[in-house]
Every structure is written in structure tokens, then in C-alpha cells.
Amino acid sequence: MEHIIIPDALHSFPKLWAKDVSFVLYSQKDNFLRNRVIFNCNAVSFVLSGKKEIYHASERTLVSRDEATLIPEGNSLIAERTFDDTNYRGLVAFFPTHVAVDFFANEKYHFVTHCCF
Image (cartoon, rainbow, N blue to C red):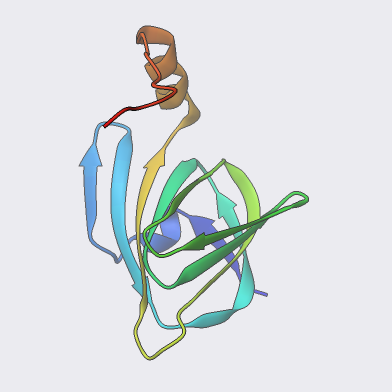
């Protein structure tokens, strides 16, 4: 099992920075092995093609194309795969915990509980 430190391991992929937040467009051939991934920050992972499996603590999360998930700082087992000859593709936003804490502490939110069209 390979150990991967994120976001450091993604240095060769296209990246955009906005202060403490970075966005990485990520692509790879199928990886049917589970890798131990060490996240040095939080991430929101958007799957553009393929499927992602995340094992964190006692939970298993499956993320399909056009879905996203929050991955907290820490250790996870991750497998990314496709079911044809295309590459797995994803867009990942990385941010430190203080960005989320500051965001929610300084803003007022109005959550819509229902919607009528």
C-alpha cells in the first residue's frame, strides 16, 4: 500500500490559488488499489469522471461522477477508478480548518428547507 501526502503529491497537476484555498484539477489512470492518503488540510473532492471510494475511520463513502464529498484533515484509504479506458478525473478544493471556521463564524446563513417552483 502506497502512502500519499496530500496536497503535496499533486504538485504536477494544474492548480489555482486564492489565499489559503487551492483548486487542483486531477487526473490518473485506474488505481484499483487502496492507498493510504494523509490529508494535511481539508478537501472538497468533486468527481468529474469515474468513482471514488473513501474509507475514513469506520465509514465508507462512495462518490460517483458529478458528486462531491468533504474529506477532513487526517488519514484515509482511497481508491479511484473508472469502468472504461478513460482516466479518473476530479477537481479538489483544499483549505485549512481555520478557513471554514472563519467562514461560518463571520457570515449569516439562511438555509432553504423547501422550495416551490
